Length: 455
Ligand SMILES: Cc1cc2nc3c(=O)[nH]c(=O)nc-3n(C[C@H](O)[C@H](O)[C@H](O)COP(=O)(O)OP(=O)(O)OC[C@H]3O[C@@H](n4cnc5c(N)ncnc54)[C@H](O)[C@@H]3O)c2cc1C
View 1 (cartoon, protein in one colour):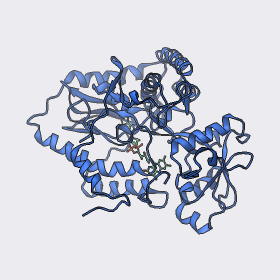
View 2 (cartoon, protein in one colour):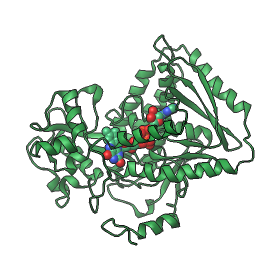
View 3 (cartoon, protein in one colour):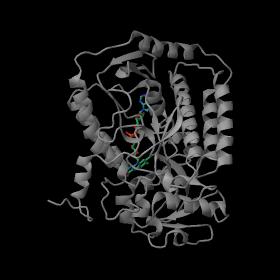
View 4 (cartoon, rainbow, N blue to C red):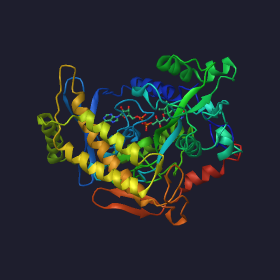
């Protein structure tokens, strides 16, 4: 993958995440861990800043679930589906982690740091942003503009297509913005010169996806791509040593969490983080649970969670949830995308005020097919919160750093090498970047520059 010092990506073809998921599910089944696959969590339950469970409903039949837990690990993903073109599937990564954590009393960190991956497909519209894995460039894919120029030679002549994602995304964005893009507003990613066997063994998912979505054979044709919102480096504020949030017993991991990747995640590091912190956080949550002598609950917290669903189910306004979700995605795309500015971000905030006003008048109508409409309403609340946090922090980060490009502040400002921490009441505050925990720093020293463990 791009910008690695040596070849070290852990992968299973380009189905790595799927393999991890299969293993995890198989192990959970083996240990007889109950899996509530259809339950949508609407609230984390907290008493005196200590978590004691979660509340939700079954998306197929509306059954309510009250789950008591001594510790909760929030792993509900990031917020990249609040942009129009995104690598996330429908109804995922709508910022649920952010809302659940903030309503539980936690804060967010660096929500403005969102990675735009250089290669999302453009068509069809309902699949816009679907990812073409970085493995395509890793295996030797070439980027060209509409004039046929291999444009990365202008932006990073040394690393070319294997530059960091932020640089490649900005390069593609610039080519398109300056009129050298394709008719559909993209650039070309070409792997057709690679041996067919490489494509079929290393890029089987890309091959299959392009066949299914566009009937395009990537062994002979280039792929039309443009930057797509892909990964939340920012997220819920967590302690670096064990990823506990501001709330006792509440942990966050993966895209829900923040801090590990700075302002620019390298390819492959998300799944590795999940493996490494899965273990660390699991152990910390277990120790927290074992250390409790009693679980103190709050009937009021449960009542509030219940009432929130009741109120939404009774909502019969004229505004459509899907239309409002689309409005947020349009606003974020227009005003808080790959390149941002003070003027654009302020326009984005004004749009958001208006959208939040319209959200007062939504109508929720579960039907015979299930309670998805209710889930979408909660997704909408989460997206609005995530969008506000993102724009407010993006306004405050008056510099260009990693994935965050400000046209009005094109340089990195050393005084802004800080975390921006957000809460709905406190707004944005600056915090020094925490030290790397001693044990992790020690481990890092033990790995030499070729990635080998030094005995
Ligand atoms: C096509 C593609 C290829 C990728 N390839 C790589 C790669 O090769 N290497 C790499 O390191 N990274 C890769 N990534 C990134 C990586 O897959 C993600 O960053 C990672 O899966 C994030 O994991 P997560 O557990 O934090 O969140 P997710 O995998 O997004 O999981 C969040 C889960 O929470 C559930 N959820 C959300 N809200 C609620 C709620 N309210 N109630 C109940 N459940 C909820 C969702 O349904 C989802 O199942 C890729 C991403 C994509 C899209």
